[in-house]
Length: 259
Ligand code: SF4
Image (cartoon, rainbow, N blue to C red; front, side):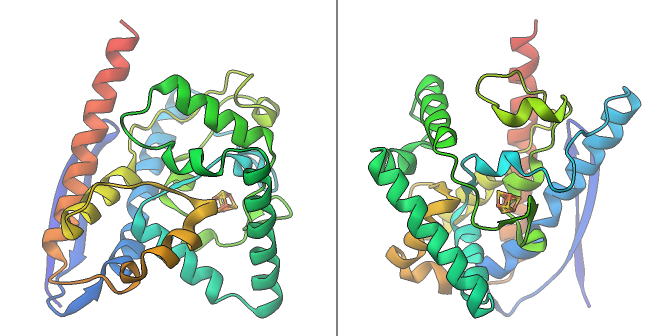
């Protein structure tokens, strides 16, 4: 089996990854599912560095408070989440669909259903984004995959969930918009990179979709499920090089903010 390798210079250190070369057509959603281990690698590096500074992760099994925040997805992740729901056993699937319907009603009643679709647009100011995120959190809509405080789709969880780890006392997470939460400061925003790569393939503008609207987005963009490419190497290189570049830019921005 032929492989190709990539060496990425990230703020957390050098990351070496290798992937199988596949020339036959593959769905982009399936390629992205394989790539979701990349944020895990970067997070592990970040955790190792944080430990050296005596800053352990304070997230605990069964907490799940952060799972009431809005979760951003790239289009491929929206497809993955939709197909996870469709593949659930009937009872669980019904519970998730009911939770999504409840969430939709809450969002409509609060008048932010339309706004949350806009929240991740690059042109929106940070204050507006924080305001919408905070209003979403106030509605206390638990992620439909949260079961007894734990993620029930751990292997398929989105990149942003993998990147979100907390160093401050866990009790502060009860209101992340009031309390000062210290997150593991990795600069990776993998869903943005996935979204850019998707946009290049489809000749569209990059979009980020809130998890709670994933199924709706996939229903409205039927071709997303079947989007496939021949030869995965170029796509994977594009995603990972973009992710590395963005992470380094973000690290620089943060440094400027602290000087
Ligand atoms: S997918 Fe899992 S980790 Fe992510 S918000 Fe939902 S329950 Fe939490």
